[in-house]
Amino acid sequence: MVRLSFFFAWIFAGSALLCAAPKALEAYFIDVEGGQATLFVTPAGQSLLIDTGWGYNAYRDANRIVAAAKLAKIKKIDYVLITHYHSDHVGGVPQLISKMPIGTLIEHGPNREDTNASNHLVDEYKAATTSVPRITATPGERLPIKGVDLTVVSADGKLLPKALAGAGEPNKACDGVARKAEDPTENARSLGTVMTFGRFKLVDLGDLTWNKELELMCPENKIGHADVLVVSHHGLDQSNSPALVHGVQPRVAVMNNGSKKGGSPSAWDIIKSSPGLQDFWQLHFANAGGQEHNTTDPFIANVDETDTGFYLKLTAHEDGSFDVFNPRNKFSRSYPATQTQ
Image 1 (spheres, rainbow, N blue to C red):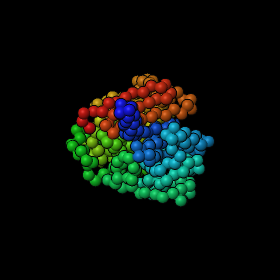
Image 2 (cartoon, rainbow, N blue to C red):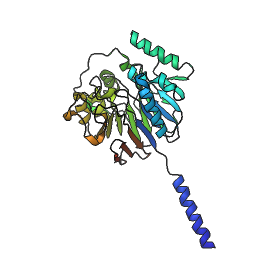
Image 3 (cartoon, rainbow, N blue to C red):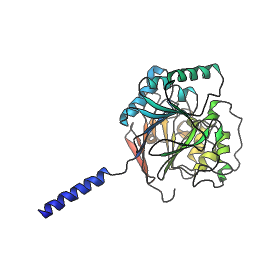
């Protein structure tokens, strides 16, 4: 009887340990054909969507976001972060909100691009979200997403006032990097964030432009190194300076490009040559790059111009290890925790 009781106690203890296994951070890089829509589900069960893709297109992008939410087993998006007011980032909000509840919007403040097209876009966005609570984010602020640490590093043209914890070293990647013509559009106002989960770190700066990258990263690197860089501006050469990409030294880069948008060869070269880069994942084969400026087939979610809509999924763990999965070909790669983060 004693042995039987011990056996059942051992089984119960083992089951408890399995149930108590640490939960992971999940991210779905949703194909919105050259825009951005990245869905995060934290270990605490909260959801964050960074941007919503395009509007119109027969609800294409809203439907893909809802499909990703279903895969993630969520019925509401707790926070929607809008990096800036361009149609490939905020255009999908009215259609999305008609299909799925949204808890809180996170914005950089008012639209700063005074054109008829931009004002019409923002009017539609505001009309669809009149009853949704808002947070106006400022650099240095920690956003209230449970389960991760999400810090604002750029917003409305302003930048992080001081280095993040563990960062602040002189950035040698700034040497010889010249400024470009100023970008007066909303791109330079992008709401950029750094997400940490234990020892795992991800950087997403929206469409932040080249000169703003230099201000953020030079002469000192205010962000530090990262495991994953969400490639800025869909891989266009108005962004992705060596000061940013080589300064951050990502282990993995993920590019939200389309077949006909993003993936500029010069930007691709900068990303590909970043010190310590292990793999470069793309949502699409970029027509502009040809075979010489695209990653290899296993790392591309959509390989032709057919509207297939495959996503990429990242699963990250508190020790800094993570996996990336491509559902098109069932290819996945694991990245172990590093000794130093």
